[in-house]
Length: 146
Image 1: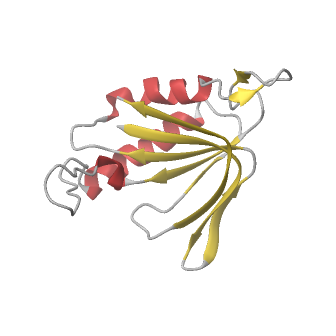
Image 2 (image 1 turned 120 degrees about the vertical axis):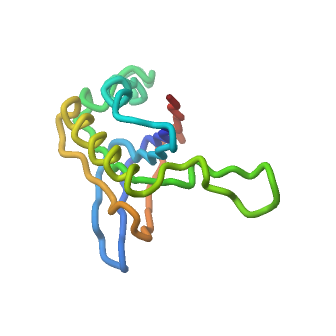
């Protein structure tokens, strides 16, 4: 499992030119699920996300987590995080989980993460073509891999 976490001031996600989800201050998390992933790691990763101190305190130090600031999360499935570009110029996605397996893990991760996060987690739509606007804060981008 691979997560790309971006600290944002705000973000919105559109599907078919209509806003589907939007958040204020918080995190946009792109999640890639590999063919080897299973639900056994979800608790550990969800806990880690909730405890990441990537938000500034009153002294400008990254000392606060998402719950400390009452921040929001936009979670977006992104199989392209498992692109393999070693051969040729067209990425291969053979390392990504098959959609029928990935959606189960994705939905389980949403439930697991919600147990750690005070505010409601917003999401994209699994498998949809989405447009995501965000204002990156910092920029701060963290990659978590399991």
